[in-house]
Length: 131
Ligand SMILES: [Zn+2]
Image 1 (cartoon, rainbow, N blue to C red):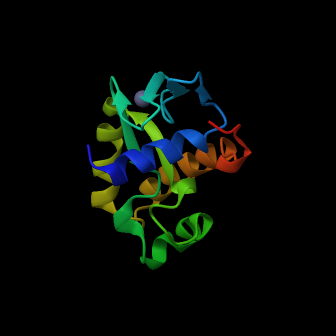
Image 2: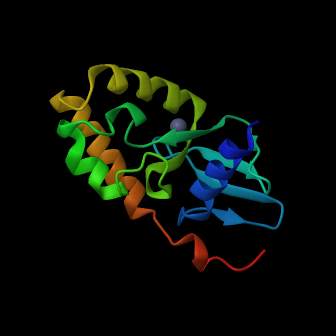
Image 3: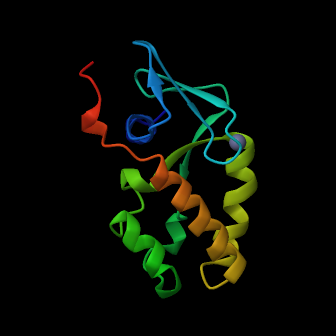
């Protein structure tokens, strides 16, 4: 797995208030269905763990998504926009919204709710004990 992707997976775990690190493994819950997910200390995903961009990358720069992208600093890879999701939820959700775009009221509503969930689980990565 690419180092950049591992870094983003780790950042998603470190900034997730539900995530615990036992010295070897990160454990948290899927942003969507709350099923248990794990990540190795080096960011390598275990099981069905995937990286999710909460606001789809394709929405950045689009006026209809401005109220959402502003909440993550207009950067798709800002840790506030990164979350861990199980493969089933990630692949089930992403494509449809990406395709419909932020101008679709239902797609906008779903992503806004997801982002609210993500931000409610936010913690500063620097608040963690040193490893
Ligand atoms: Zn899930």
